Amino acid sequence: MRNSQYDSVWDAIEDCPAQAENMKLRSVLMMALKHHITQSGISQVEAARLFGVTQPRLSELMRGKIDLFGLDTLVKMAAAAGLQVEMRVHGAA
Image (tube, rainbow, N blue to C red; front, side):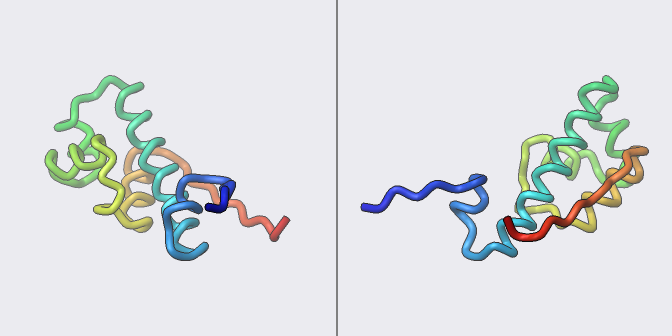
């Protein structure tokens, strides 16, 4: 058995580097949105209204159902929340 070391859990479980990067970005956005909601003290109903989604959809976000959200959707939700999304691209180390 070979011991492998990964930079992130997504690198370990995804089939290819592109999928791992996509999941990393999605998880960062989801955590930022969840943090924004909890820090602002708004209810899920209020947050759903702000983000332009249903309350059950927002509940999926809060429960970390990452497979149900694409990058476009998460960026739109972040913009609706007044968050600024920035991206950096680095070359291979």
